[in-house]
Amino acid sequence: MTDWPPGGSDPLLDALQSDHLPDTGHADMAGLLRDRRLGRVALVSSFGAESAALLHFVTRILPGVPVLFLDTGRHFPETLAYRDALAARLGLNLVILRPDPALIGAEDADGRLHARDPNMCCTLRKTFPLADALAGFDTWISGRKRYQATTRAALPAIERDGAHLKVNPLAFWSEADVAACFDRHALPRHPLVGRGYASIGCAPCTRPVRPDEDPRAGRWADTPDKTECGIHLGPDGRFARARPRPDSPH
Image (cartoon, rainbow, N blue to C red; front, side, top):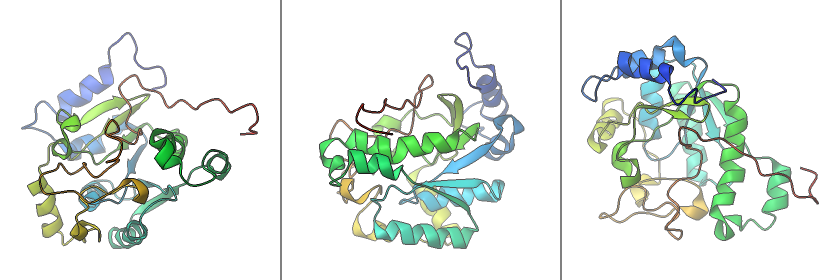
């Protein structure tokens, strides 16, 4: 899976879609997640507003699946407490990823990189650590859903993400489906949800949303052109590290 795309076709992706996702009305997500052709699988979670639904759904199907959490060093304290509570409640195999402290020290010494260059801040704190961790896996699972934003309206349930497969098990769920999952399984809500946070990322770049806004409007609200943190690549995407600066040992 390191030399994709081979001739512009993807027989593995086509086969998985044919077997488990012939159309949106016949999506066998459990069968897809258990398919051995996915290889080594990890789940990536932000422990945000709706994360408990994904974590419960997937770990009932794949007990013990590694759950990767990107500890950027800029999370709300409530998110870290929620992460620990959910990990204990659901018996998660939690793996905490952190950015390179030397790189952060060199590039964000004053802690204001998020204001100067939010894309670079996400790259250092999220993309690079996740790229390193995913080198040990063939497939990763995300919690993205179509209803979250117009930019996700055509989100597929399974896709290519660089050399990896990526599964979005809740892609076709509605907001009501997520709420029903929380209610059915008595899942705790993130403590910031009650304060108007519909999508929760790092504290400096997240605000509450208004009732007329889409759930992700509070993310990078001061940077209108930025809608994603950068960990979600396109089919021919690659995680590419910038070359070290001449005066940097890293």
